[in-house]
Image 1: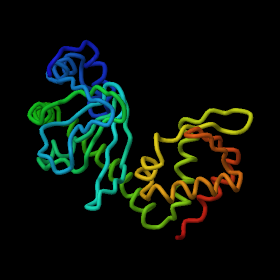
Image 2: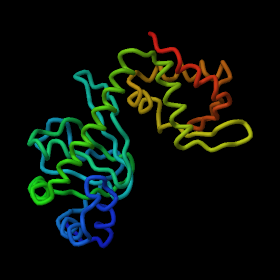
Image 3: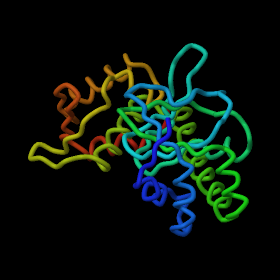
Length: 235
């Protein structure tokens, strides 16, 4: 599916890899970027698929995840507009190292491997920015490994709630209001555990009056108590 979108260059200009490119260069790249629409839950590409190119999120959000042999998922990142994905396999010629799906109805701009490699040859600074992006992602993955290896589910859930409060929370008289992911299964995938342990620990936090639950709506009534959970890191 190929179509021309006047805001493609604007979207590409938001991507860290492409900052510093001239308007003409962005237009050149935008003319070669193919918009692709994905429905909520639809797979963009799967782990170990041959890499055809990279993607930039124009609208919506994508979910980057790994799947175990037993079918359990570990979410590595949820990215929104202006984010790029799959720069590394385009750069090194390998297959896609993780799977990507659309969280909601989303539009992604596809840039072929050939066009991206040609851009890197013409503009070496783009290749250097790829290294910075990959370095930042490596640090994030090391953090995920550290959490999964050295912390309890209770700690990881508390950390998730605190991060969500800081990023998206709304202050109300009762505390800080947040909205959880669509299901406890999805929340479990994001913190590296199983649905039953998420449900159990949410119930405990409610019993301890750290939070108040109303479906997927959570009010954090005692943020300091949740933050104090992050001080202890042992299993």
